[in-house]
Length: 279
Image 1 (cartoon, rainbow, N blue to C red):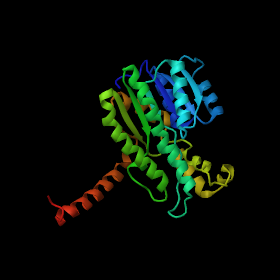
Image 2: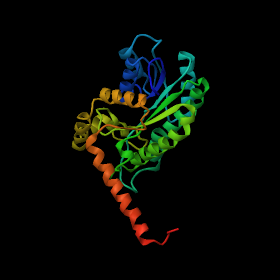
Image 3: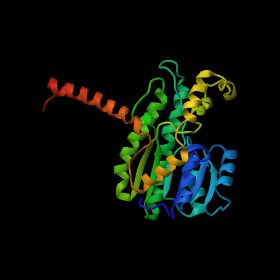
Image 4: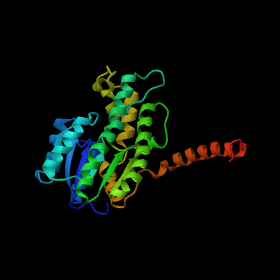
């Protein structure tokens, strides 16, 4: 998509964090925006902060884990703005743990939000974007954890790798329809992603109690010291207009991708040198 001006965007996780920042930057670039989030109060605050003009920004309460909720939100967006061009499948949660200790219900929770939330967005909005023939763009939020998998974060890594692979497939599949695809793979950004895990089904520790834990405080300091989400959102907008597939944010993290590639190459070379499957 070469220009955001005059387009209509739908942003999930739009009440705070990167979603709110993306909405802010899209508005500055001349788009109209529908914010979607489970947090009704947060949406009200976000709309008030961004604009009082319902012709350019509105909101809808929506749980991305529910396909029907996305379909209903899409219909409300079309009714309000007439059409949709840009979809930011941004809503996400964090979940870590050790193998053998993570409840299956927690696995289903993070997969339903981080992966199926993206799938619901793509399956619902693709026909709507195709219908007007003006083209469009999907922004799917993954993570550097979708390229380099840190220990102790298996469920999160799995969902983010899935979003990266899914986005790579979509890039080729949607190109003939003039629909671009970008997958956002940030490192640390100053959001509240580290608090989302307390919403997992098995959690019994209130967030306010957890905040007293030194381990939580250490992670809180790391994330609060991350990139300004508005600056990340500005870069996202530039990458969308350049039709860039991967959107990275941290130059210093490139070494992780290089190390992963070196491991893949070494293990691929091993079978080439062995020769048993040659031809």
